[in-house]
Image (cartoon, rainbow, N blue to C red; front, side, top):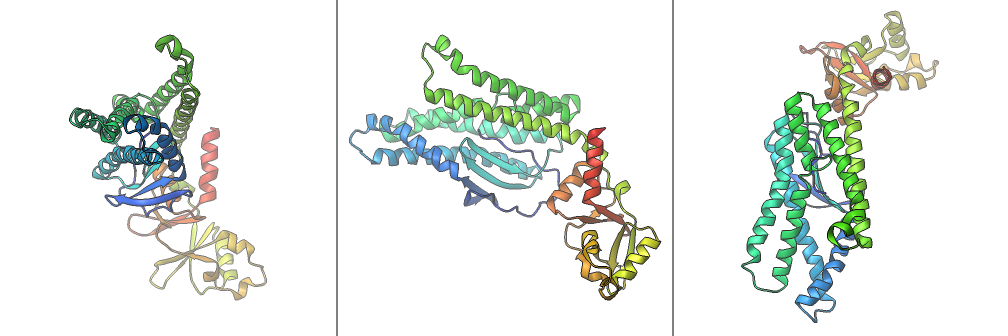
Length: 389
């Protein structure tokens, strides 16, 4: 099913992430990579095989080319899915969020937007624009339906109209991970002021939608007078399972984020000793122990931080070598992303760590003064304690 991931909390864009295994880049839209997964070729083949008999009815005698025509229809259909996802992506960009990629896969598409929405109205517009785009494409195709003569083109337009109208309507179902679930989340968030509670409500909507879909084959014959086919049962199971797992994951993520405000970098920081880069490691360790400092940072002559001494590297260094090794030998250079504001907390802290994974980070005050060093191990321990509490 088409639908975006949560939009970004970060104001500035993050570096592009490595492409996921099993994906192929086919281009870009507004600077956003467009990817397809290997599963797309499977669904394109299935569409081609399913559509071929109908093509044979409209244009008899095509032989093998009816499968080629079916594959072309699959491409056209997924171009409309791409348009759905591109509307999510462009809207997110215009609202100031970073977009990593658009991926087309077996069940439709996904727009990867960094992090979580900052406001309910952002969540609403980024979510609702996708289904509205699909409904617009479906409506336009219905209009063309009456203008095009009988033949393959009209058949493709009929399929495009039906598929997009179904995608648009289904994606407005008020349950996560569908776009309609994000619309519901935005409305509850705006009314209650509680984003996490809104996610839980929308997650339950997704679970109810999943149960309804899984039950559909049982009531299809009494309601429509037609028994479900094997394909009906398989599709109901696959899509129902997708909705259930997506809704459950969103609810778990909301509960996780409820605990994030308890994570504040400043009280977790280790007291820091600053030393010159050429100081022997043994002397640096001695001074740190004397001052009861839990971390060591090397600085230039003007006091500029140059690196964070790795606790693991110090532990691995034999005692008899420490007097002869400069502290810079066990120091990680200050690269981009390793310096964080001393007041960073909650989701901003987790996002900063996930963007630039490391064992230690340098915390600095607003005026540039060194406050201390934050260890990832300390953050993990604090999170586990807050979860247990």
